[in-house]
Length: 219
Image (cartoon, rainbow, N blue to C red):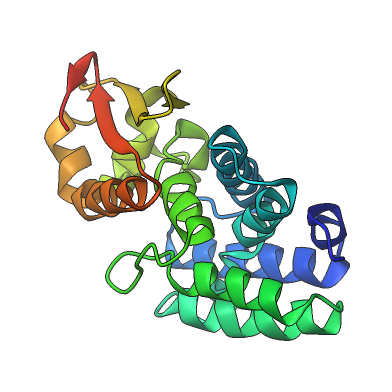
């Protein structure tokens, strides 16, 4: 069986992720490096494990999380679809069973807003993991005076946590935002679509999604 460690240690996948991130850096996007995909992998796997999915499903969630952004190597536009095609070829070459490939590729192809839908538990966990990764360290621009709205919103996040309630009925994204850097309204300006996607993904997992910013609950 192809494992998460197999995928994480695959030099071709690592190369594609690094080059994809370089392309996004050239376009002015926030960090989408190994740090982001590793965080997504661990978060997606953690969600599935906490909800009682078996070890194999947890592994598939981690694999989908780690490979979900390789399509940025081709182009930012429709990167979820191109990434799914790339992942299909790589995982097939690694000897992953067809059923597992189908599950992972479907999740990758459905992780981005506008076209993505939580069509299976892996896709749902990946969506939540990806869209909740908001943090200061993702900002590359060192010149605060030239920050765009995405830089301001991410840089304003002092702390971020994603927690599943003890009764496993609610998943909560809690943010502490420095509103002197970016007003809370700017967060909604660029992330409202992603938060709606998280809500629908949570519902697909039998959860309610809650967003808390500066101790105020918005959903």
